[in-house]
Image 1 (cartoon, rainbow, N blue to C red):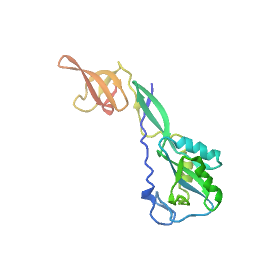
Image 2: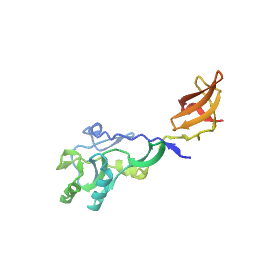
Image 3: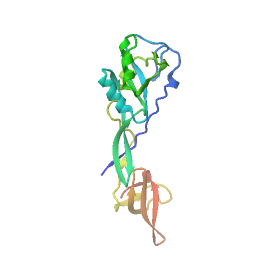
Image 4: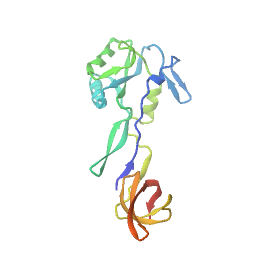
Length: 203
């Protein structure tokens, strides 16, 4: 059986991080620094829709260190469930370079990224340690969170543990990890009912 995987995609809210404070963190909250830094630093690069992997490979081919956080998502089609990898932050990846060196402008040769900053010539460094922390936590490998329950096979006997049909039993018609269709006997008739998945369990 296929285990349901429900991972929500994150929104990388760059604007919310642009308070002009000293780079660093307060608790678990990072803020962008104002101004530029010399030396190798991480920067945020925006890509076109669905072009994150292309930008990642082009920038690496140009000699840049890049970081593309990934997640695992379920794609349902034709009654099938396919587990795929997707960017954790759609349309964003991270690139490391020295803004004091002329060579960083080669990043624009990838032709699919825009580096965030005051102007294209004045990129703003991300807080020191932020990307390094993500790397240490393994965000470059697919992240599976909020794992759903194992799907119940059609035809299996199920027990309902909550809701108006609590303590009844029925037959599973289908299960998509979030909802479950159950065939119940109600007043002598077989009635199909769709219930929240958390209310249904194998009998």
